[in-house]
Image (tube, rainbow, N blue to C red):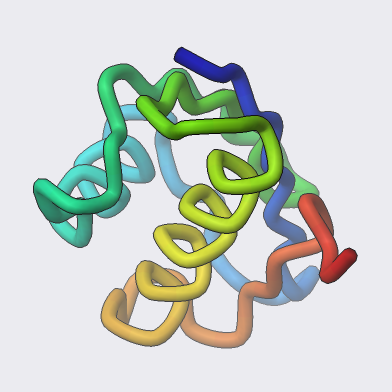
Amino acid sequence: MHLVEFVFAKPPEAPVLSSDALLAELWAVCGPDDGVEHVRVHASRAGARGVAFLLAPDEASAVRRCRAVCRRVLVLSSALGDWRLTHPVEA
């Protein structure tokens, strides 16, 4: 199991979401092939920071899986309109 940190930035004018709301949005887009076992997230006025524990063969695969989940939530969640993923960035 691998721990991967992630960070979302939100536009200043976007409403602040609760950590619980963000967590629900993330779990809603996770599939069985993502390998996500556990997620913690902390919301702030700037966006959100979190960690995901993922089952993956190596660290690079875990980072790719985390990045894919984070991108998916940005595309599929109307609550995260105009938010962006700032970490992990492309390698």
